[in-house]
Image (cartoon, rainbow, N blue to C red):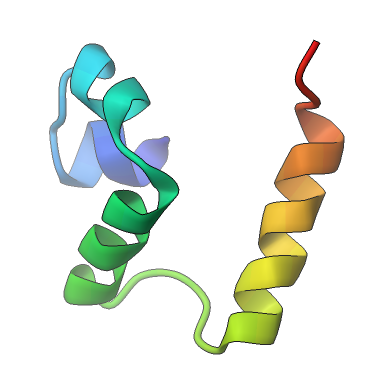
Amino acid sequence: MAFGLGRLAWPPDRFWAATPRELAAAMKAWGWGASGAATERTAFEALMAAFPDI
């Protein structure tokens, strides 16, 4: 959220409408985020555990 709302200055509706792939591409372009698929998968699974769908 800090990246999308802060660095990119996306309004909340744009941030929440973005797909994980769009956000990852933006983060990569800015040099943010983890590198390597295994690390990204681990982070994704941690987010899914922290914020499960209801």
